[in-house]
Image 1 (tube, rainbow, N blue to C red):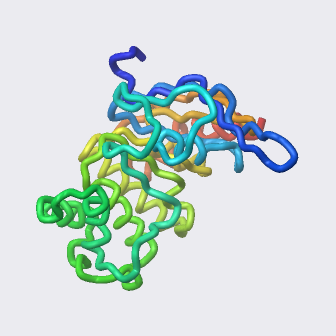
Image 2: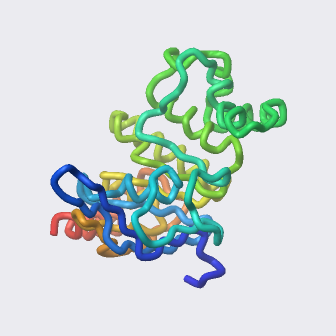
Length: 254
């Protein structure tokens, strides 16, 4: 991948934490290039630093050394062209769904009225337009996570960072959300970095999977997922899909 086409570039990234007894190296010399519009999953054992890497790319955590750039600009703080979806929806319970979606606009000091049509468009696309005036407690967990995705997309970011957004959902709802996410991605073609513990989820969603080693984490392998798009759940029953799953499982286990 050339300098011109790398939307996200991570070079020699290190992250250490200082404890009372010692310095712990969480991430060691990680390098990654992500092209514009790619869907990348970050997969690895628990505690290996996947979420830490994602938060550094988002400017939400400082790095120890190395560089991170988005669109050719160094990242040192949160950026307007980046949206983040966390493990929990973290919606404000006293605000309506519409007002939750519009919250980034308020935070960025933009004119809310300029984004109301886009908010309704996103809610319509995710099947939530009839719930715009409801509050979060009146929605299911999967519906709340769809609101969180709408909120992350409201200001039209080029980069979407997703930190295990469906991990708390039951298996059936998770499958539906994965289909919904791919539909949204195919509609808007954002660059996506998606952290997950699920090997099958990573294969189903991704163009490439970055496999992280145990701490101190490095990128141990990059696996290109050469499966046709658009993808339906039936693809998970194919030999090709399960070969990727078996290969990634072997990498994680060893």
